[in-house]
Length: 202
Image (cartoon, rainbow, N blue to C red; front, side, top):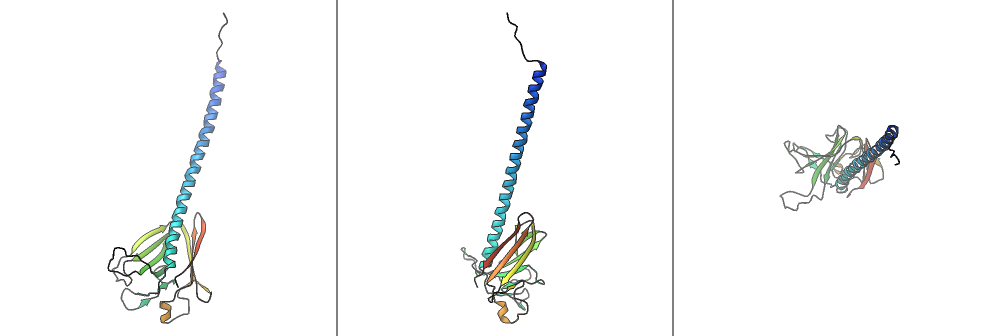
């Protein structure tokens, strides 16, 4: 009878080594696919947050209202659009079109402010236009990882300004004057520069 012959020990070790190498390669490829999928998901989520923040900003700027605001002590008025290095916030505006479907006893004009704190873009709004010293704003953190915020304003003559009302202007008209276009410019840590030119209601 013919003797049966099996694998030698060396052949088994070679086969096991080949299977191990293939397994390691397959595992590495799978890990890379999972890593790339995670990165893509994170970038998609980040981009959705950026789009949401820019949509909120655009809605606010597009509905700038000429209504000025009385200060907390009731002594002076603040312009409907206020952007000044000495101001409390980076930008403060009066916004029209505040829906009131529940019929609360309030107007349809909203005071909104934007500021930039520790790399986070923050939106504030108050339940009343002429607020008292104790009126607490609603604070919303819109976007994180913001490296810089820049604002520019186009006036009726086609000139860009970094402050509003423009430097050198005075008088009661500055309380209600609105820019034609507002450029809201963000420098993000991951996506670089993102900006939007918004034509105002004025």
